Length: 79
Image (tube, rainbow, N blue to C red; front, side, top):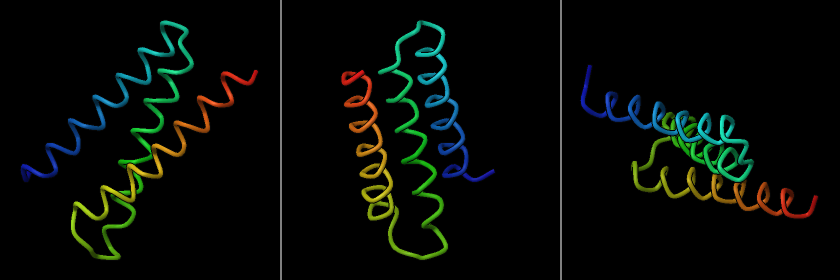
């Protein structure tokens, strides 16, 4: 297994742990944050066939993850 792949797997495990910690502690904002991290990782990998640098794909992916997180937090505080 290449180092890049191993790092990606470790990130996904860590992000899932953040999400599950939020679920187990009944903290919706932590759940949304963990979900945003996973959205960012997913988009980063979805864009891989399109090409571009890892930095460019990361900015796009985690940017969308940040939008997801901010919208989720806004909804949590609105209701």
